[in-house]
Length: 309
Image (cartoon, rainbow, N blue to C red):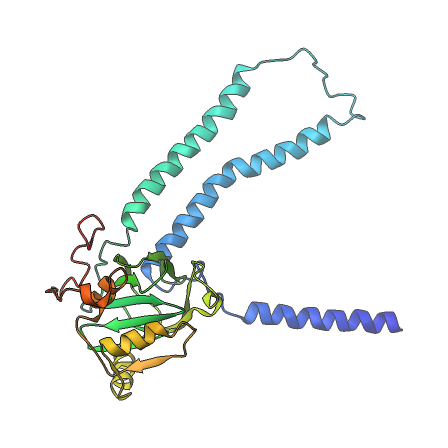
């Protein structure tokens, strides 16, 4: 009787866990929120499918050979002097060679299509720029065209191409938004870029994928994908916060070498990202005022070779 009760309890617990797992929504590279992540998932599926052309037959043939050439099978031919077969050699070399060539072609084309420095096109809305600064151990997001900023919270309007200029205030880091795009490194004194577009409304999460110190595990941020009115309400909420993000406030934020809660800024200096870009490798006294084209930002160009040096 007791064994039966244990069996019933185990069944109930197993069913409950299965319901939780099936009812939970997947979040990650296999649950894309935009066209970039969807293309990356499709590329992953294609590569895995092609590689299975080799993996599955090898596994099946290994089991088949072990079963056929077992000691009890008298029908299996024993050929101790066999050393070469042109057909076998051709098969084991030409098939992997063709697969490698196919994967190389797919990777070459997809790498150029998914170039993070390449602006996204399409969608009914005008492109939006977001400037990102990695700090110890938090993320600062500046909206230069809107004059607002936030810490550890990023909002994106639906179906809007977004260009993100990325740098670091201290050590090397990496920003990763699994549902929108792959990871991009953030480096002090250097500007990298990422293009994203949110195609589904909801809340998601971003994180740091590069170890950067004691607070690395808490270096996460919320990503809000909202329609036009929802994004405007979020921006209005920032403007009602009353906090100003000027250069002294930026220095205080950088000096807080700890994980920070979400913070909102009603106004941010228009040249703050350029200041952060230079401040990563220079003292304050060596920072130079520069004219920044608001259409392209402080990165100056869509390539590293012609960007900030």
